[in-house]
Length: 187
Image (cartoon, rainbow, N blue to C red; front, side):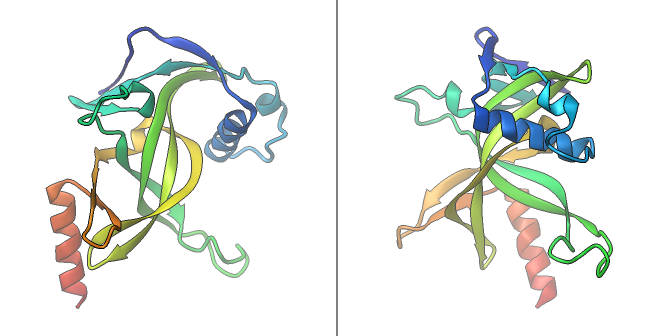
C-alpha cells in the first residue's frame, strides 16, 4: 500500500532540468522513440509536491521535509531497478538481458504528475556513485538526478563515517547479512 503525506500539497512548476528528467523518465517507461515526442513536449510541467511517502507502514522522508535542526530524519534510500546487463554492447552483438540492481539515492521530493490522463506517483532523487569494499557500500559522491516510480523504493539506509573519513551506507540488517552470505558462497 502506497500513500503520500504532506502538510498540504504544493503545486510546483518544474525547472527545465527537472522537466527534462521527467521527460526522460516517461520516454523510458513508456518506450517512446524520442524526448521530442509530442506528448512529452506538450505535457504539463507542474507536479503536486509531497514531503513523505508511506509504503507498508514505513515512512520515507524527503530532503524538503528536513528541518534545519533535524538530525533524526533520513532521506537516504535503496532503490531496486532492472537494468540491461548488456547495455555497453550493441543490441546486435548482445541481446538485452535485464537484471535487478540496487542503487542508493537521496530523495529530494515525492510528487504526483498526470501523464496520459493517469496520476503517476513519483520520487525525484539524487543517485550516488558507490563502490563495494568487503560488502560495505562506500559513497563516492553524486552521480545524477532522476525521477522514478515510487514502487522502486526498497528500504531506508543510513550513512556512517569511517575512521579514514570515508562515508559508508548501512542497509537493513537482513540486506547486509544476505550480501555477506552471497559473498561467502562465491569464495
